[in-house]
Length: 181
Image (cartoon, rainbow, N blue to C red; front, side, top):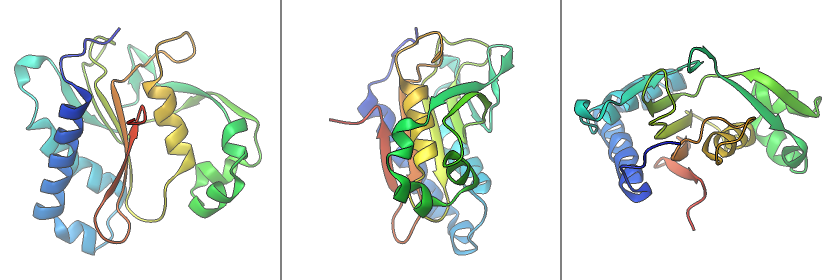
């Protein structure tokens, strides 16, 4: 079980502040429509500055490990397939592939940015998925739901907060997981 030393509101503020710094300090990446990995790297740097080293937290991009094994996720795609227009509108390779499958068992994945403690599940704090252009990605949304779900055998991560950040036209938009009520 993760130790919750930050409120979700405080974590949301840290994410928003990091994204604001990115937009203010790295506008050339936005103008050039750079790849989302470039966005994730810069946001991770600004996010890392907001956590104290003494907290024992790491901020990593494309982190593919869970404990000592590869990060894997099981997704039931039934709910996603009930929204076929959203899958078609996104058009990313993952959403395109969903229309041909019923579920994804043990799919390897790498979240764009994580704030965590490497090698254990004591501090799974923030998980971020980013799209540099386009629309909301239903597949990324499903991953974030699974990553922030209460811990079970098939959902072992239990990140405190997930966020999908979309850099479309205008200001970045945020979708929070679990959903803010």
